[in-house]
Length: 534
Image (tube, rainbow, N blue to C red; front, side, top):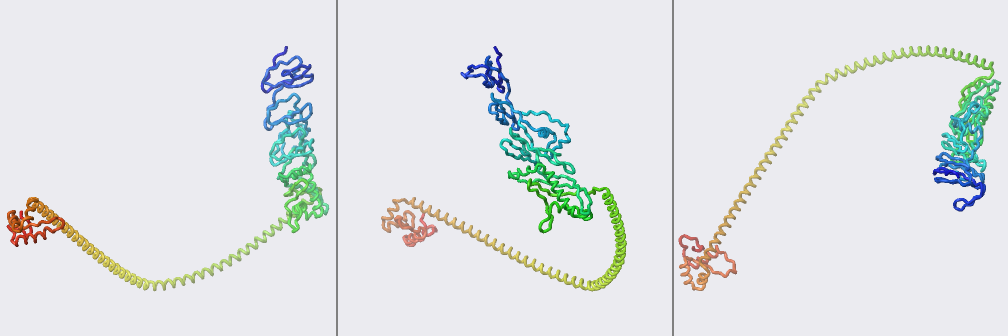
């Protein structure tokens, strides 16, 4: 019997059949078959099965990967950024790299400047896991070329970026020239800096009068490349050693230009001669601003001449002596020139001082003349000022008096206007009061007359009511005499009987009728005519 094997979720068993048998699920196994059992599960291997190995899943970050090889087909692929569990026919594959690439990847200061491996022969890189995907962080403003040997193509990765090599890809190692003067294969780098940067070189030249000089030059450079254009991207890697190629081309031009110049001419115009030799001139004679290498898009933008020294010791001593003599001569000539300038300036200062004195005296006389003129004008002004002041004072006093009279007249006019307005207002108020009084008096009179009319009407009504309807009927039916008797018996002077359809003025009409009916007899007891006797 065999022990039970417990597998967690991230583990698996690689099994191999030793004898033919029927596995779980009626699967026929033949000797040599390989398969896996993946957890979580419990597994008891039969006697016909050999447990080759027990392994775990490989967790991978987005920037991590492994190389996996299929043992049946031999193909290798990369697995990146996921947890991966090997299949029964898969195994981890170790990617081989050259020694220089291993050292450059492991070097702690690897950047686009490159590394001088010859100076670090004792550096031993730490062992790396060859089954993991090779990665390289491309520095800022740089590029790296990766070549695929199976597809025979290359790709350029621009920095900053992360390069992850496929199974058939390899880095392109740049072997650049270094030192002063430049020597080949001094600097090794995986990435190419795009600049701007500078490089320094030492060039030995010979003038037309056979003076050998050593010139130290510094070049500012950069790559003028369009990153979106694949052709430009591939051109920058067409020249393996762009530093040595550029320095050789520039040194050749400098040697040719210096060879056609004398030592004295070159010593005076070294910068212009070298810049003209490297950059060239336009058709109008102006100096060009850059020197372009079309093969790899390298552009030289500036040249700095750091030093110029003769190679021959005798020439160097002679040059030093001539320079010293020239400095002494220049110093003496400058001293003499300074002395002559000082004397000339002193004489000019004395002349200027005398001239200034004369100018000052002339200015003083002019000022004295102006002062006398001003004094005379002041006296004239002072004498005429009194008369003008008195006349002006009298005129102003008269003006003030007239203005006072004018103001007085204005005030009187306003006072009269105010009085007239007050009187008008008073008359208006008086008339309004009289009108109000008359109105109230008329209203009282009307009210009195209305009240008298009401009283008379009530009196008449009461009289008619006292006579009675039958009495009035009998009076109407009786003859005049009977009417007179009846009226006399009733104590009435006259009476008026109407049907009530025609309006009659009882106060005036009745008076006349009653007077006629009574035969013009005077009223009794001093009663008013036309009134009914009580």
